[in-house]
Image (cartoon, rainbow, N blue to C red; front, side, top):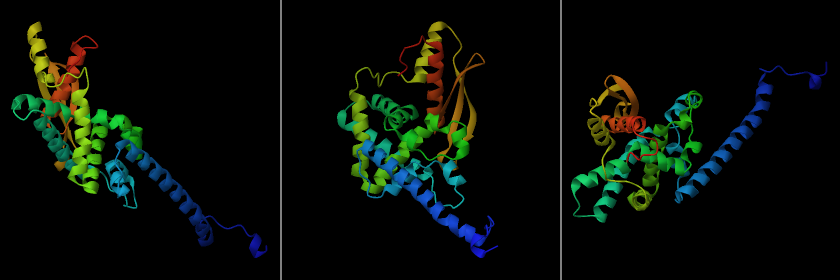
Length: 269
């Protein structure tokens, strides 16, 4: 058989060389789509990144980084830690400037609501962050893209990315704008009773046993533990909640229990 007409074995060096351009084109296509996706997110954030790689990392879940055998992907866990601190500072600053002489207790309750996992997840959803997340195949299959805890973590990481890219002024402006909008929204019952207090009052009014809270699981790295806590009344588990602290997880569990016990449509804020 003439040399030019011979079929090449799939594993031969020449066959491998022929596949390289196709692989490069495929990778290039993925990168281009990712850049377009990040540009769309940046536009919704109303912030122009000097280093778009920071936003990409902020939207990369640990599951994607762990499955990346080349080791070129870095996850957003350390960004979450930094973003959490920036959000807390910016929120406290807004509340203080709005009411410098206001009662500390009321401002603390407001801050807890405004930085809660539930509220951050709402902001992430409004910005379209869930759709832009890099997730590992396993996490994707188990519904990770629909987990509100992951949404909230992504929002924290994005705030950190803005801080690292543009400094505290840019990050403060981003968070403060969201906080001011939420404080101004009609119908938001901010600063009233927290879910745990509301649940206790409801049960007392009904003459029922007070709620108990039990840690069901502790997950994640040591610097970023996530707690899952069950809210139980008279031995019955009414709801579970998650958070980066036991207090936050208990509030989330109490909020879920209120949703079970109260008539539908009643606000729990």
